[in-house]
Image 1 (cartoon, rainbow, N blue to C red):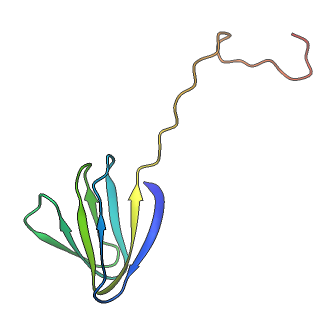
Image 2 (image 1 turned 90 degrees about the horizontal axis):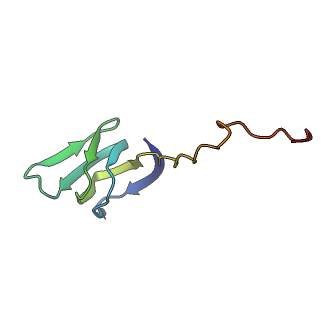
Image 3 (image 1 turned 30 degrees about the horizontal axis):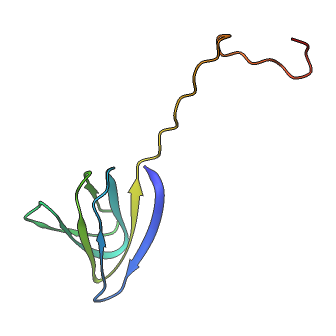
Length: 98
């Protein structure tokens, strides 16, 4: 997974990660993070190096306990495949007459 952003929560701060169409992974880099996820009766406590994967459509509320730094990772975008060239994928070399 790539596309990282880092967040820091100080004591008493919370952030809501809105539902998304792709999975995301929350990974703690410092402190302790309290995670409440929609559709999950249990709360999750994460320490540095710990993570939690949100499936598409899940929303989460994150709070530092008392502070935390974390990253939200999303899957790398898949590059669309180009149409194959009619000549089997070979291009014309520059400077060479066709």
